[in-house]
Image (cartoon, rainbow, N blue to C red):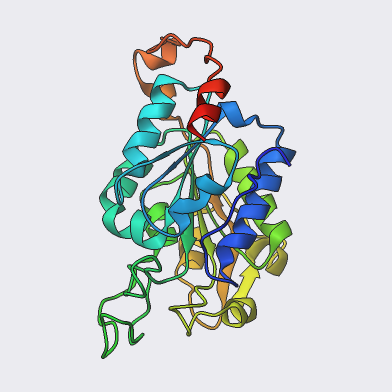
Length: 283
């Protein structure tokens, strides 16, 4: 497979990231994308390790600071397929401010957030999406803060594409992420998945019992109905909606910017030199 890299994976056995990696690689392949024209930008965390295990151009930024880099890359080279990918702590916590204003700008990038409702890399602290009462390594008497609702936040900011999927449904993941990548404009996909080491509450079985696809549950569901989408985004308990929750195009940053909309080139792209021999010397 073009996008899979044969390398050791530093995730815990049973982590949802394994399934996400395979499903994402297949999705990119089926979209006929090329690794050299696909760029993944991440922050810091277990999810942010993803591009190290893929055959893809990538950049690891500072904790929570991946989105400004993704914005810059797409601005100077709009022909790139840009995917900003990280975990709930990185994207919704440290990067929450960037997420808000990235949505406002609406540049053409896909944001994939691995949401396991915990900080995994730093051994189990409560993340922005950890539920009230959940006891963690740093909140020993239970989390007291209200959890962030990323879908409701995105819809309230008029994000043009808001969706949810999970690591336990490969075909569903591929369908949703494929639509997100093809979408012209900002697409946020919240990907639920278990953290087998540090989150014993939101397990694989817990998600499987609660998650349902909105379009399968209601064939008349209208993804362009913002009010209905916002109502759906507030569901999180015995039933958790997934699928494309809201989808309504609006003009992108490039289409509105007085210079960029004219097709102005900010960089002159050159052929990449072959550095194979030099890399082999280093290996």
